[in-house]
Length: 186
Image (cartoon, rainbow, N blue to C red; front, side, top):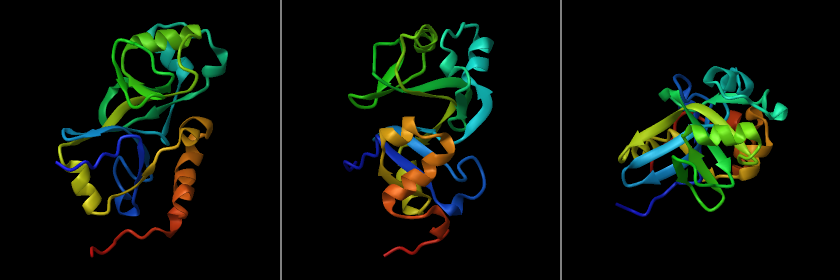
C-alpha cells in the first residue's frame, strides 16, 4: 500500500456525479488509510436544526445561539446515527482524532457537553457519513470522480454551508461551473 493519505482533505464531487447522494457535495475526509476512508458531507444541511435534534433525543439545549444551526446530511451510510465534527478534541467516549486540532465524535456525551456549554467551540453535526472500502476511493479518483484539496478550518467552521463548496473551489483557483464531466488519462 502506498503512503497516499487524504485524511484532513476536502473531496469535491466532479460534475460527472450529477445524480445520487454525492452530486454537488463537499466532503471532509476524517480518516483515510489502508482499510478505506470515512468522511462527512459538509455542505448539505437538512431541514432539521440542532434545537430540534436535541429535543428529539431528550437533551435540553442550554445554548440558544446553537438552536438554529443546521444538522447536515453527512452521507448515505448509517443515516440514523449522529456524527459531530469538531475542534478542541477531548476524551469523549467515541472520538476519532483526525489531527491535533480536529476530531469526529459519535457518542452522546459530546452532545451533552455541547448542550451545557462545555463542548467544542466549533462543530458540524451530521446524520450519516460517507465511507469507502479498501481501495474504493483510490479507484474513484482514477475515474475522475473527485478533486482533492487540503482542508481549511475556516471553510469548515466559519462559512455557511452554501459557501463551503465555492470557497474550496476558490482554493484551487477554479470555478465549479467551469469543470467538465469527463477527462482523459495520460
